[in-house]
Every structure is written in C-alpha cells, then in structure tokens.
Amino acid sequence: MRGESFGAHTVNEVAAILGSGPRLVIPSITPDSSGEELTGARIDRNRPMPRQEFEFTLVLSGITELTPALLDAFCEAGCDDALFAVQDGVAYADFCRAAPTSEEAVQSAIRDVESAVVGVKVARVDPEGLAPLESP
Image (cartoon, rainbow, N blue to C red; front, side):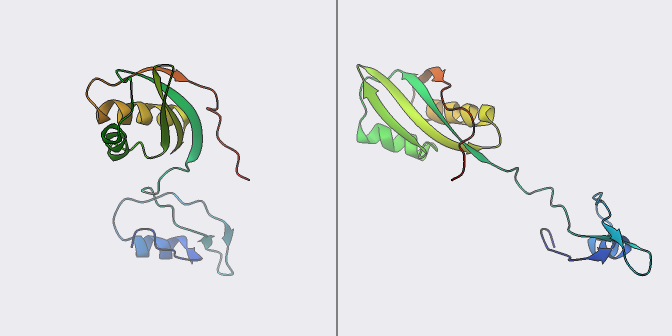
C-alpha cells in the first residue's frame, strides 16, 4: 500500500485505508459537500529527498598514474560519475554527483574514492562549481 495514490478522500476514509499503523499528518485542502475535510495526496516518508547535481574536483594523493585496473576499482566503488586524470604528476577526479546537498555530494565522493584503492586519499576539494547545476 506504500506509495499508493488515494485521490481525494475524507480524513476519515484515509485513516481507514491506512489502518492502525503510524499516522501521517496530512493538511486538509477543502471541505466537501458533507462538511468533511478532503485530502489531496498521501505523504510517503520513504520517498528520497530531491536530488541536485553538483560539480567539484577532488585532488588525490597516493596515485602517480591511472591504470585500467585502478579505473575499474573506482567505478566499482561508485565513482562512475567522475572523470579521472593525472596532470603534471597530480591525480584528480572531476565529479558530477547527485545528492540532496553539496556537503553530501562531496562526502559520498570522498568515501567512494578512499574505499576504492588502499593508499588513495583525497588531498583537497576544489569547490568550484559546488552550486547546484541549473536545469536547461
């Protein structure tokens, strides 16, 4: 029943549909002809928060070159939303990561990178582009 749409029902009808489980507070919209308040939709607490995409760069330490095995390890660790490169002996990962906030985007990327390969650490975060990307 979770996520099911109930359409417009009275508060009492929604309560009967939901049964005796935990109640959600659903704001009333308008009374119907009988005087009972109607509701428009059920709120699903398990629904994920809206996500935005954030662009940022992680500068890495512990890597001097990128190999296919290393790139596979990053991808398997969840870094398939990053472009990895080495320039002038410095490795970096350009991310475009979806998350509810910029902090969560950066923290999850650091966690994924550092869990991929033993010895790889994030030296710093280049915050350029941490504002949410605009939709076209």
